[in-house]
Image (cartoon, rainbow, N blue to C red; front, side, top):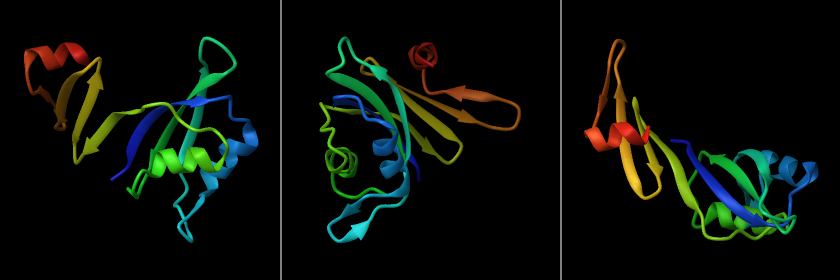
Length: 117
C-alpha cells in the first residue's frame, strides 16, 4: 500500500539527489524500492525545502533514513495521505478525514471531515 509523506528537509535537494531517491537507496544492506520524490520548493530561506515522497514499503524510519542518505536530514514529518482500498484518508491541521468512493457516490466519515477535504 503506497504511503505519501511530506518532509521538510535541511537544504534543497538537487536533481541528482531526487534521482537517487527515485532509484532506491541502500539501507541495511538492501536497496529500497524506488520512491516517487518531488521537490515542492524551498522554505522561508534556502536552508530548507519540502520533499513529497511516496513509498511502497514501510521499513523502520525509511523516509528519514533515505533523506539522510542523500545528505538532506529531515525535520519532523507527517503522513499527508493514506489510501486504503477505495478510501482516502487525509490529515489537515490535525483533523483527520475519510472519504470512501463507490462508482457513483462518496461518503464522508463526518460532516467535519467533509470540510477537511
